[in-house]
Length: 318
Image 1: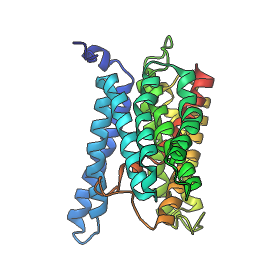
Image 2: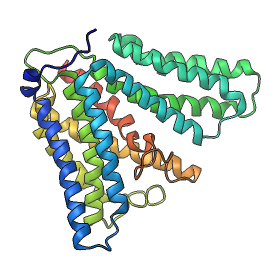
Image 3: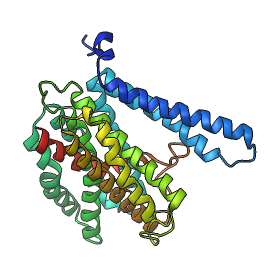
Image 4: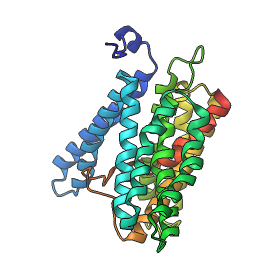
């Protein structure tokens, strides 16, 4: 049985190790820092930060292992993320009992969408959910015969599909992009580039906002979001993208532009999901991940950055 295990000599020469070392280096630094601060200031309120760091250790280890060791596992892992995100969003939205059949059909689109990514059928991948499911799901709702609230169900269900399945599935299709001569990192490098920049942008916006934040952007939607935090991330993320350009087939300037787009769309995904949760009256989509909330709370930005980054790279790199 071929598990596609990478040989050690290939791993050691691979640029991916640079980013893996960087990720774990940052986690080690954060863990040591919190330990030292806790010893110096025993009364410091570090509970949430420590909980978040422990969760990041688990998530980073699982993600990196799935990405580097076996590509097939990566498709399955990302599809599972879509399933969990869909389940969390479905559970907090106000669907009718009459919608259950259509929701089952929507869930069945997950294996289809990821199979299309796996077999590299770009034409079908790009229209299956936005076009086919857009037409089919309303029919399933109509066949139930309950028209009370059907417009809301149609729009909410399709938006849920677009956010949690279609958007996230672009992460999987990065792994299916063809090899380019001289570009060693391949799809795994692109996936690491996307995920690392999306998450580091969230952290940078948080840090800049905490240090210098004064002017709120959308106080009624996300009171903690400030112009200083947003612009700080928008300035720093392209610089990090410049340093990690070797993970992409792009030149350094296009890599910086990709970093800019990731920073911008990551912010958009975050505040859109914040608006949804505020409308419902909840803080997190679930309590699955200690210190982080639910799966969707962690990948809401990726649902926006993944399709934008994919098509940017697809156009300029392939």
